[in-house]
Amino acid sequence: MSFRQRFLRVVYPIFMWLNKMAGRNTRHIENINKTQPIYSFYDLKAVANNGTVIDFSSFKGKKVLMVNTASDCGYTGQYAQLEKLYLEYQDKLVVIGFPANDFKRQEKGTDEEIAAFCETNYGISFPLTQKVVVAKNQEQHPIFQWLSDPSRNGWCGKAPGWNFSKYLVSEQGVLTDYFGSSVSPDDKVVLKAINSPL
Image 1 (cartoon, rainbow, N blue to C red):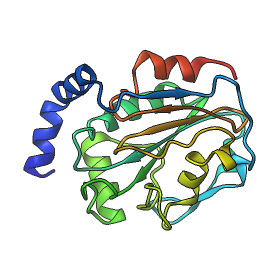
Image 2 (image 1 turned 90 degrees about the vertical axis):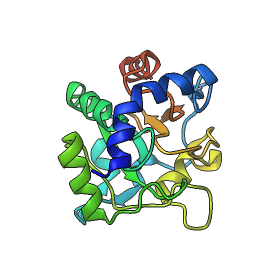
Image 3 (image 1 turned 180 degrees about the vertical axis):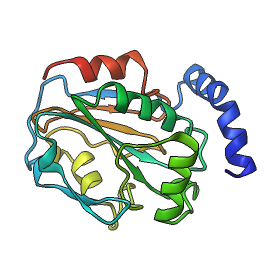
């Protein structure tokens, strides 16, 4: 862990509090009409950090929380909360981290370095993908194309605004919620969404 990463880990609670007070990255968008996707979530795939294929059809019957992550960000402390959430709700929730270097180059490491960082410093046991592009451009990963395009998911056009943006998909493959970076994984609005039926 670099000096910057150690510093960010120490100041994370203050950083989160300041951002919440300022209203930065606190957006929560909910699928209040329960709009169904145009294209099935379960047709999607990603490549895990270890090179194996993650087939999203294997998640039928569980909620899936997808987060674009970075190792050198003020929000990196959320790794600990995501791991806690994953362990506490693993009977009904899958957490997947998508390391991305889209925002101020805060994920410079290789896939191997990212995995080692996450395991050593946060004990991460939930799946991580290989590094991807999450910002809206020609290289955007298909998962994030689906998450941020209403013509695919049925309603949501919000691409990640920063690292640690969160998307929740229901047990039936419906995108239910988007949470901004400053919405902590253990925030009551996230827990309510995880525990709510579609």
